[in-house]
Amino acid sequence: MKNRLRVLRAEKGWSQADLAEKLGVSRQAVNAIETGKHDPSLTLAFALADAFGQRIEDLFLHKE
Amino acid sequence: MSNELDKKEKKFLVKFMLHIAMFLAVLAISVVMNETNNLSIYSTGFLAMSPVIPVIFLLRLVVNHYRSLDEYIQRVMGESLLWAVGVVGCAGMAYGLLSEMVVVPTISPSFMLPAIAVIFGVAQFIKLSGNTHEE
Image (cartoon, rainbow over all chains, first blue to last red; front, top):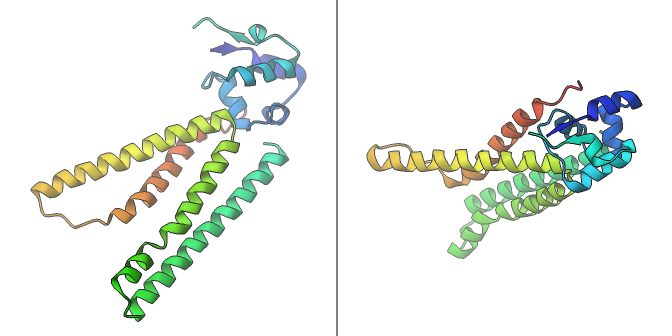
């Protein structure tokens, strides 16, 4: 699944480690989600949306 | 990774090493006792299998650690475990079939768990090494 995490993270000036700490996950998890290697669970997707102050559908693009 | 995760990892590593030390100690004691004493068949059998006890505690530690990990690391660990069990299982089956046809040296089944652990570690390293760099 494609997503806008890297762009949004850059806008906030956060590193992957910063975002990982906010979410309580590993930096590898953030990297895997950003690169599309891992689709997050609904819980983690909501946590990501909360961290960026956006809606889930603004973060993730459902089209394959 | 956050400090909290770092602390958790360090705590797990210390506990892991303690369990390995416990396993080695029990293994050494069981070998020495079996070789120096003339014990009954039941005592010998119990002593021979006793190193598995700390391994069971180690397994419990690893499972508890697995539960505390995030979903991505859990996925990586799950896939790595599948690879490890699959490779060791296939290798064991191939060797077993080979031994039916050709005379080959006997390999103790006690090496199966260490082999699974090593391949599990290698598979995990390969899977995680792809996303170590921040882009």
